[in-house]
Each structure stands twice: as structure tokens, then as C-alpha cells.
Length: 228
Image 1: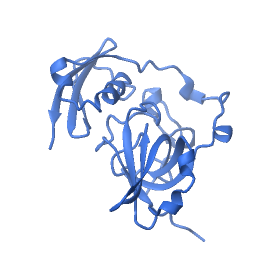
Image 2: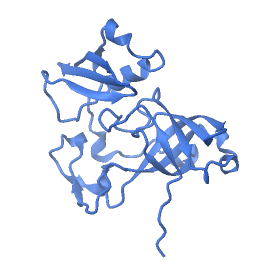
Image 3: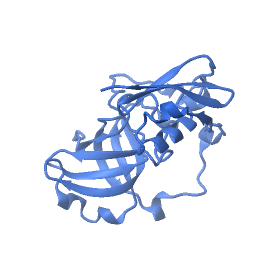
Image 4: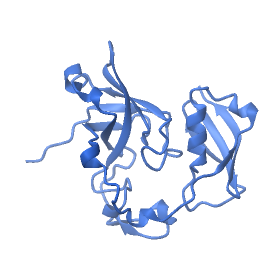
């Protein structure tokens, strides 16, 4: 008998669009978010004991990639977007079932009078409003495999850029967001196969649009636009 997955809540992050989101969870632990549950699932007893875990698994929906068809091969940005790999050898959002998996740090469990239980997390790679299917605790003795092989993803990519952030633009960023934004920028938000020193890129981060250029391994922030 088929059993339909139920959305139990939604995550709230600083990413209203897909562009700019870290390539994997945990790469930018300074990025904080909140998971708010639907009333049926936000009951405090459902989270009893979770406070003892430092990290959790999120099972979620690629809500912007839902489609009726699928392809057995995809073009991972990791390989420059020019080489096809089997979809099950990648973390591409374009899958038979649009399900994502992320490991995040659990910062705290709060009880909100209007929202019920709320999880404060860090290091998520999810867009704001992403539907959450399930929460599971991360178990270090079972989930950590230090000698595991990383396949084609082990090929070294230098995503560490020097960031030039003019003071007058830096001042437009809230003090509690600046560290996360700088680390996000240093990881190169562009697709892996993009190399155009004259192109100005932009992505939304909270209520800001961050504009930047990249040339010779240096990312320069060119503008910060506030959006109400």
C-alpha cells in the first residue's frame, strides 16, 4: 500500500532563492535557521530527548524541482556541468522523488506560544520555506565513516576565494550576519563551470541582494541592495 509523505513543517533561512545556497550542508555553520512545525507535529513530547544530540538529519523536499519526468543521468556542477553521471551517484535535485538529506547542527529547542516547538539549527543548505518531511538524530558511532570514499566528488576544487568587502558596503550588513556572508562568499557561490571576470553576479541573502565579481581568485563585493 502506498503511503504519501507528510510535510511536518518548514525551514526558515536567509535564502529566498536557490542561487547562493551552500553546495552542501555544514559548509557554513554560521548560517542559522529555524524549523517551524505544523500544529499536529509541533507537540513538545515529540522532541523529548532530542536536546541530547548536537546534530540532526533533515529529510526534506526539493520543492523547486518537483516534476513529472526524470532522467537517469544529470550534469553535476561539480564536474563543470559538461559530464553526465547517474542520478543516483549525485545529489542533484532532479530525481525520481524530489527528496533531500542534510545534516545540520542543533542549536536549541524552543517552545513558542503560537508556533509550538521550534528548532534552531545551523549549517543548513535549504531555501527559505522548504518543506520538511522528517527529523532524525545524527548518531556519531553509526553515521560517521572517516575512511569512506567520495567518488568523483573527491576531486579537489579550490572554492576558497579571497573576499574584498569594502567597508561602506560591509556596514550595510547586520553584525550577526556578516561572518556567515563572508564565509559564504569565500566558498564561491557561482556554478563550478562559470569563469567570467567581467560578469556581475547577485543573490538574495535575507533582505539584501549581494552583488559581486570574481577575477583571478578574488571575489569583490560591488554592491549591497536592501529589499523591504
